[in-house]
Image (cartoon, rainbow, N blue to C red; front, side):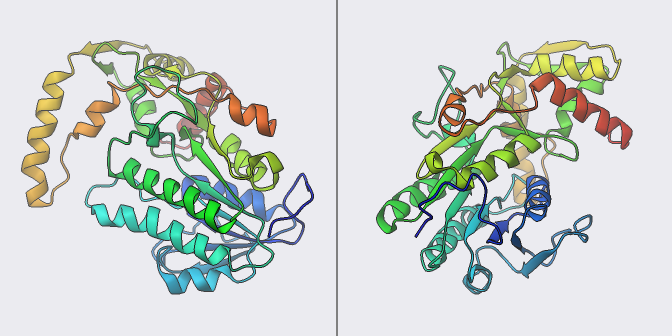
Length: 340
Protein backbone atom coordinates (compact mmCIF):
# COMPACT_ATOMS: atom_id res chain seq x y z
CA UNK A 1 0.00 0.00 0.00
CA UNK A 2 2.66 2.51 1.01
CA UNK A 3 5.54 3.70 -1.18
CA UNK A 4 8.75 1.68 -1.06
CA UNK A 5 10.92 4.76 -1.60
CA UNK A 6 11.87 7.45 0.90
CA UNK A 7 10.68 10.65 -0.82
CA UNK A 8 11.97 13.03 1.89
CA UNK A 9 8.73 14.91 1.33
CA UNK A 10 5.12 14.14 0.59
CA UNK A 11 4.64 12.80 -2.93
CA UNK A 12 4.18 15.68 -5.41
CA UNK A 13 0.59 16.14 -6.49
CA UNK A 14 -0.72 13.81 -3.78
CA UNK A 15 -4.22 14.24 -2.37
CA UNK A 16 -4.14 15.12 1.30
CA UNK A 17 -7.02 15.21 3.79
CA UNK A 18 -6.92 17.34 6.93
CA UNK A 19 -9.41 17.20 9.78
CA UNK A 20 -9.56 20.05 12.28
CA UNK A 21 -8.27 22.44 9.63
CA UNK A 22 -10.14 25.47 11.00
CA UNK A 23 -8.58 25.11 14.45
CA UNK A 24 -5.42 26.82 15.67
CA UNK A 25 -3.03 24.01 14.69
CA UNK A 26 -4.99 22.98 11.62
CA UNK A 27 -4.80 26.46 10.10
CA UNK A 28 -1.01 26.49 10.30
CA UNK A 29 -0.87 22.99 8.81
CA UNK A 30 -3.21 23.88 5.94
CA UNK A 31 -1.02 26.82 4.97
CA UNK A 32 2.08 24.65 4.91
CA UNK A 33 0.43 21.91 2.86
CA UNK A 34 -1.04 24.39 0.38
CA UNK A 35 2.43 25.83 -0.16
CA UNK A 36 3.52 22.38 -1.36
CA UNK A 37 2.58 20.72 -4.65
CA UNK A 38 -0.44 18.95 -3.14
CA UNK A 39 -4.20 18.67 -3.55
CA UNK A 40 -5.55 19.62 -0.12
CA UNK A 41 -8.98 18.69 1.22
CA UNK A 42 -10.40 19.48 4.63
CA UNK A 43 -13.46 18.35 6.55
CA UNK A 44 -15.14 21.17 8.47
CA UNK A 45 -18.50 21.70 10.10
CA UNK A 46 -20.84 24.22 8.49
CA UNK A 47 -20.44 26.38 11.61
CA UNK A 48 -16.64 26.28 11.65
CA UNK A 49 -15.01 29.66 11.12
CA UNK A 50 -13.06 29.74 7.86
CA UNK A 51 -12.16 33.43 8.01
CA UNK A 52 -8.53 33.97 7.08
CA UNK A 53 -8.42 30.79 5.00
CA UNK A 54 -10.22 32.12 1.92
CA UNK A 55 -7.00 32.52 -0.03
CA UNK A 56 -6.07 28.85 0.29
CA UNK A 57 -6.84 26.38 -2.55
CA UNK A 58 -8.56 23.94 -0.18
CA UNK A 59 -11.41 21.67 -1.24
CA UNK A 60 -13.79 21.90 1.71
CA UNK A 61 -15.98 18.93 2.63
CA UNK A 62 -18.74 20.23 4.88
CA UNK A 63 -20.04 18.08 7.70
CA UNK A 64 -19.12 16.24 10.88
CA UNK A 65 -15.87 14.29 10.95
CA UNK A 66 -17.76 11.36 12.49
CA UNK A 67 -20.47 11.25 9.81
CA UNK A 68 -19.86 8.12 7.67
CA UNK A 69 -21.22 9.78 4.53
CA UNK A 70 -19.01 12.85 4.98
CA UNK A 71 -15.89 10.75 5.56
CA UNK A 72 -16.62 8.53 2.58
CA UNK A 73 -17.09 11.59 0.35
CA UNK A 74 -13.82 13.11 1.56
CA UNK A 75 -11.64 10.03 1.27
CA UNK A 76 -11.79 9.21 -2.44
CA UNK A 77 -8.21 9.04 -3.78
CA UNK A 78 -6.66 10.34 -0.57
CA UNK A 79 -3.02 9.38 -0.03
CA UNK A 80 -2.29 11.13 3.27
CA UNK A 81 -4.48 11.92 6.28
CA UNK A 82 -3.65 14.43 8.99
CA UNK A 83 -6.25 13.73 11.66
CA UNK A 84 -6.01 16.85 13.82
CA UNK A 85 -9.68 17.29 14.79
CA UNK A 86 -10.40 17.33 18.51
CA UNK A 87 -13.27 18.18 20.84
CA UNK A 88 -11.69 20.52 23.34
CA UNK A 89 -12.74 20.91 26.92
CA UNK A 90 -15.63 23.31 26.48
CA UNK A 91 -18.49 23.68 28.98
CA UNK A 92 -21.64 21.89 27.87
CA UNK A 93 -20.02 19.22 25.68
CA UNK A 94 -21.46 15.80 26.49
CA UNK A 95 -19.11 12.87 27.03
CA UNK A 96 -20.49 11.14 23.97
CA UNK A 97 -19.41 14.04 21.76
CA UNK A 98 -15.79 13.49 22.81
CA UNK A 99 -16.15 9.85 21.86
CA UNK A 100 -17.67 10.67 18.48
CA UNK A 101 -15.02 13.24 17.57
CA UNK A 102 -12.05 11.25 18.84
CA UNK A 103 -12.94 7.57 18.54
CA UNK A 104 -15.68 7.27 15.92
CA UNK A 105 -13.94 9.61 13.48
CA UNK A 106 -10.65 7.73 13.79
CA UNK A 107 -12.38 4.44 13.03
CA UNK A 108 -14.19 5.83 9.99
CA UNK A 109 -11.07 7.47 8.54
CA UNK A 110 -8.90 4.40 9.06
CA UNK A 111 -11.49 2.05 7.61
CA UNK A 112 -11.79 4.23 4.51
CA UNK A 113 -8.02 4.63 4.25
CA UNK A 114 -7.39 0.91 3.77
CA UNK A 115 -9.72 1.03 0.76
CA UNK A 116 -7.50 3.55 -1.04
CA UNK A 117 -5.02 1.70 -3.29
CA UNK A 118 -2.40 4.48 -3.28
CA UNK A 119 -2.64 5.35 0.40
CA UNK A 120 0.67 6.43 1.98
CA UNK A 121 0.30 7.47 5.63
CA UNK A 122 -2.28 8.19 8.33
CA UNK A 123 -0.88 10.81 10.74
CA UNK A 124 -2.97 10.57 13.86
CA UNK A 125 -2.75 13.43 16.37
CA UNK A 126 -3.18 12.21 19.93
CA UNK A 127 -1.96 14.04 23.08
CA UNK A 128 0.62 13.60 25.84
CA UNK A 129 -2.44 13.77 28.09
CA UNK A 130 -3.02 10.05 27.47
CA UNK A 131 -0.18 9.48 29.98
CA UNK A 132 -1.90 11.57 32.65
CA UNK A 133 0.02 12.98 35.59
CA UNK A 134 3.71 12.04 35.44
CA UNK A 135 4.56 10.92 38.96
CA UNK A 136 8.20 10.22 38.11
CA UNK A 137 9.15 12.54 35.26
CA UNK A 138 10.20 12.40 32.56
CA UNK A 139 7.84 10.01 30.79
CA UNK A 140 8.39 8.62 27.31
CA UNK A 141 6.34 6.86 24.64
CA UNK A 142 6.40 3.57 26.60
CA UNK A 143 4.90 5.08 29.76
CA UNK A 144 1.50 3.45 30.42
CA UNK A 145 -1.66 5.37 29.60
CA UNK A 146 -3.32 6.94 32.62
CA UNK A 147 -5.84 9.48 31.30
CA UNK A 148 -7.43 11.80 33.81
CA UNK A 149 -10.58 13.11 32.10
CA UNK A 150 -12.97 12.33 29.26
CA UNK A 151 -10.86 14.21 26.71
CA UNK A 152 -7.77 12.18 27.56
CA UNK A 153 -9.75 8.94 27.94
CA UNK A 154 -11.25 9.15 24.46
CA UNK A 155 -7.93 10.22 22.94
CA UNK A 156 -6.33 7.15 24.53
CA UNK A 157 -9.17 4.95 23.32
CA UNK A 158 -8.82 6.22 19.75
CA UNK A 159 -5.07 5.75 19.71
CA UNK A 160 -5.24 2.24 21.17
CA UNK A 161 -7.85 1.25 18.62
CA UNK A 162 -5.74 2.63 15.77
CA UNK A 163 -2.63 0.71 16.83
CA UNK A 164 -4.59 -2.56 16.82
CA UNK A 165 -6.47 -1.84 13.59
CA UNK A 166 -3.36 -0.76 11.70
CA UNK A 167 -1.51 -3.90 12.74
CA UNK A 168 -4.37 -6.12 11.63
CA UNK A 169 -5.07 -4.29 8.36
CA UNK A 170 -1.53 -3.22 7.38
CA UNK A 171 -2.48 0.45 7.52
CA UNK A 172 0.58 2.74 7.24
CA UNK A 173 0.28 5.19 10.11
CA UNK A 174 2.12 7.33 12.65
CA UNK A 175 0.91 8.78 15.95
CA UNK A 176 2.03 12.17 17.23
CA UNK A 177 1.39 13.03 20.88
CA UNK A 178 1.84 16.80 21.15
CA UNK A 179 2.75 18.55 24.36
CA UNK A 180 0.95 21.84 25.13
CA UNK A 181 0.62 23.70 21.83
CA UNK A 182 1.22 27.44 21.77
CA UNK A 183 2.09 30.27 19.40
CA UNK A 184 0.60 33.44 17.90
CA UNK A 185 -3.17 33.14 17.64
CA UNK A 186 -3.60 30.44 20.29
CA UNK A 187 -6.39 30.97 22.80
CA UNK A 188 -6.02 27.88 24.98
CA UNK A 189 -2.80 28.99 26.73
CA UNK A 190 -3.69 32.68 26.52
CA UNK A 191 -4.89 32.48 30.12
CA UNK A 192 -1.31 31.82 31.28
CA UNK A 193 -0.10 34.94 29.48
CA UNK A 194 -2.91 36.96 31.05
CA UNK A 195 -1.99 35.57 34.47
CA UNK A 196 1.54 36.89 33.94
CA UNK A 197 0.13 40.30 33.01
CA UNK A 198 -2.01 40.46 36.16
CA UNK A 199 -0.95 42.21 39.41
CA UNK A 200 -0.06 38.81 40.93
CA UNK A 201 0.69 35.44 39.35
CA UNK A 202 -1.36 32.88 41.28
CA UNK A 203 0.20 29.47 41.93
CA UNK A 204 -1.61 26.74 43.84
CA UNK A 205 0.24 24.26 46.02
CA UNK A 206 3.99 23.77 46.30
CA UNK A 207 4.67 21.73 43.16
CA UNK A 208 6.73 22.86 40.19
CA UNK A 209 3.82 22.36 37.77
CA UNK A 210 6.20 21.26 35.02
CA UNK A 211 4.74 22.08 31.64
CA UNK A 212 5.98 20.78 28.33
CA UNK A 213 5.43 23.08 25.36
CA UNK A 214 5.61 22.79 21.58
CA UNK A 215 5.39 25.76 19.22
CA UNK A 216 2.72 25.32 16.55
CA UNK A 217 5.28 25.89 13.77
CA UNK A 218 7.45 23.07 15.11
CA UNK A 219 4.49 20.76 15.67
CA UNK A 220 3.12 21.11 12.14
CA UNK A 221 6.60 20.55 10.75
CA UNK A 222 6.71 17.32 12.77
CA UNK A 223 3.35 16.25 11.29
CA UNK A 224 4.67 16.63 7.77
CA UNK A 225 7.94 14.86 8.55
CA UNK A 226 6.03 11.96 10.14
CA UNK A 227 3.95 11.63 6.97
CA UNK A 228 6.89 10.65 4.76
CA UNK A 229 9.76 9.46 6.95
CA UNK A 230 10.21 5.66 6.75
CA UNK A 231 11.25 5.46 10.41
CA UNK A 232 7.91 6.94 11.46
CA UNK A 233 5.90 4.02 10.10
CA UNK A 234 3.91 2.34 12.88
CA UNK A 235 5.48 4.48 15.61
CA UNK A 236 4.18 6.92 18.22
CA UNK A 237 6.13 10.06 19.05
CA UNK A 238 5.92 12.56 21.86
CA UNK A 239 6.46 15.99 20.32
CA UNK A 240 7.66 18.75 22.62
CA UNK A 241 10.61 20.94 23.45
CA UNK A 242 13.58 19.08 24.94
CA UNK A 243 12.98 20.52 28.42
CA UNK A 244 9.84 20.98 30.50
CA UNK A 245 9.35 24.42 32.03
CA UNK A 246 7.90 25.18 35.49
CA UNK A 247 4.77 27.32 35.31
CA UNK A 248 6.45 29.99 37.44
CA UNK A 249 9.32 30.25 34.95
CA UNK A 250 6.86 30.66 32.11
CA UNK A 251 5.22 33.50 34.00
CA UNK A 252 8.56 35.22 34.63
CA UNK A 253 9.52 35.08 30.93
CA UNK A 254 6.17 36.49 29.82
CA UNK A 255 6.16 39.23 32.44
CA UNK A 256 9.71 40.21 31.53
CA UNK A 257 8.77 40.52 27.85
CA UNK A 258 5.85 42.73 28.89
CA UNK A 259 8.15 44.80 31.14
CA UNK A 260 5.69 43.98 33.87
CA UNK A 261 6.61 43.27 37.51
CA UNK A 262 6.34 39.57 38.29
CA UNK A 263 4.77 38.87 41.67
CA UNK A 264 4.12 35.16 42.25
CA UNK A 265 1.64 34.32 45.00
CA UNK A 266 1.39 30.73 46.24
CA UNK A 267 -1.85 29.66 47.86
CA UNK A 268 -2.92 26.32 49.37
CA UNK A 269 -4.64 24.17 46.79
CA UNK A 270 -7.13 22.22 48.94
CA UNK A 271 -9.66 25.05 49.48
CA UNK A 272 -9.77 25.61 45.73
CA UNK A 273 -10.60 21.93 45.12
CA UNK A 274 -13.44 22.26 47.64
CA UNK A 275 -14.71 25.44 46.00
CA UNK A 276 -14.50 23.90 42.51
CA UNK A 277 -16.41 20.80 43.60
CA UNK A 278 -19.11 22.98 45.15
CA UNK A 279 -19.55 25.27 42.15
CA UNK A 280 -19.58 22.36 39.71
CA UNK A 281 -22.20 20.58 41.81
CA UNK A 282 -24.41 23.65 41.82
CA UNK A 283 -23.94 24.82 38.24
CA UNK A 284 -24.07 21.62 36.23
CA UNK A 285 -27.69 20.62 37.08
CA UNK A 286 -28.64 24.16 36.06
CA UNK A 287 -26.61 23.84 32.82
CA UNK A 288 -24.47 26.81 33.83
CA UNK A 289 -20.74 27.20 33.31
CA UNK A 290 -19.03 26.93 36.74
CA UNK A 291 -16.66 29.80 37.60
CA UNK A 292 -14.12 27.20 38.78
CA UNK A 293 -13.41 23.63 37.67
CA UNK A 294 -11.61 20.86 39.57
CA UNK A 295 -9.73 20.17 36.34
CA UNK A 296 -8.39 23.72 36.31
CA UNK A 297 -7.34 23.47 39.92
CA UNK A 298 -5.65 20.13 39.23
CA UNK A 299 -3.62 21.83 36.50
CA UNK A 300 -1.49 23.42 39.24
CA UNK A 301 -0.80 20.10 40.94
CA UNK A 302 0.26 17.98 37.95
CA UNK A 303 3.58 17.61 36.17
CA UNK A 304 3.83 17.14 32.40
CA UNK A 305 7.46 16.31 31.74
CA UNK A 306 8.63 14.09 28.88
CA UNK A 307 11.68 12.64 27.20
CA UNK A 308 11.37 13.89 23.61
CA UNK A 309 14.45 12.17 22.18
CA UNK A 310 12.68 9.47 20.19
CA UNK A 311 11.44 11.83 17.48
CA UNK A 312 14.90 13.43 17.33
CA UNK A 313 16.66 10.08 17.12
CA UNK A 314 14.43 8.29 14.60
CA UNK A 315 13.22 11.18 12.45
CA UNK A 316 16.13 13.58 12.87
CA UNK A 317 13.55 16.16 13.92
CA UNK A 318 14.62 19.11 16.05
CA UNK A 319 12.49 22.02 17.22
CA UNK A 320 13.35 25.46 15.88
CA UNK A 321 11.66 27.41 18.68
CA UNK A 322 13.14 27.08 22.16
CA UNK A 323 10.71 27.78 24.98
CA UNK A 324 11.95 31.24 25.93
CA UNK A 325 12.09 32.53 22.36
CA UNK A 326 8.67 31.08 21.62
CA UNK A 327 7.06 32.55 24.73
CA UNK A 328 8.57 35.97 24.06
CA UNK A 329 7.51 35.96 20.41
CA UNK A 330 3.99 34.87 21.29
CA UNK A 331 3.77 37.49 24.04
CA UNK A 332 4.70 40.20 21.54
CA UNK A 333 2.04 38.95 19.12
CA UNK A 334 -0.63 39.01 21.83
CA UNK A 335 0.36 42.52 22.85
CA UNK A 336 0.51 43.85 19.29
CA UNK A 337 -2.92 42.36 18.51
CA UNK A 338 -4.57 43.67 21.66
CA UNK A 339 -5.01 40.30 23.37
CA UNK A 340 -2.92 41.38 26.36
